[in-house]
Length: 268
Image (cartoon, rainbow, N blue to C red; front, side, top):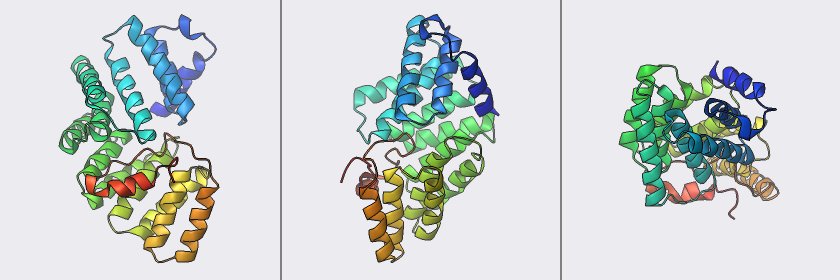
């Protein structure tokens, strides 16, 4: 339901110039762009939120949305988060949570920052659970709980929550992103057959994302399907070497960093 509401609000103001939008309308425009999972849409969302924050610097929801958008943009580029950026993201999230302590989204946003930027699985797990305590079926929080568990190396437990997030994303444009994360957790849980099934579902709707094909190749190799793996790698070589919001660097323990880097669609 939130997807449809955000899309409706965004469409209602789509023709209005950005410099004539209010803070709440800028948030709606940014939310609309969140549901267009492309790099360009993410960057447009960030510009809208930056304008909103220039008008109202302490707006809690804008701070939460801005933190999530910045985090996912950096993660999608497989870049490292330096301490200054991480501290800034966490500070903005703390202000958001203080301003809206009953917002499941604000806790979700802080959990995302703790997963991808701070790499704090315990903190991310607590924020995800707080978000779910507010709204037990909130799909982004289910996703983040899976990511917190995956970051701590609890891959089988992570899959349980990723499966719920995928199930709840049938009409959500972010379904391929959540399927990608689930496939990664299944692969790391030594279940390449499940990982292959899930990543192929993601590829059905996002066939030109190189990271998905690289993950598919890894699954096939783990299953001993050498010829199919070679074919998948060949196909990956012919796909655009572009980063995508759908396939960020997965939040894995440091011992899995080489595998995480192998999914970088720009490298290789």
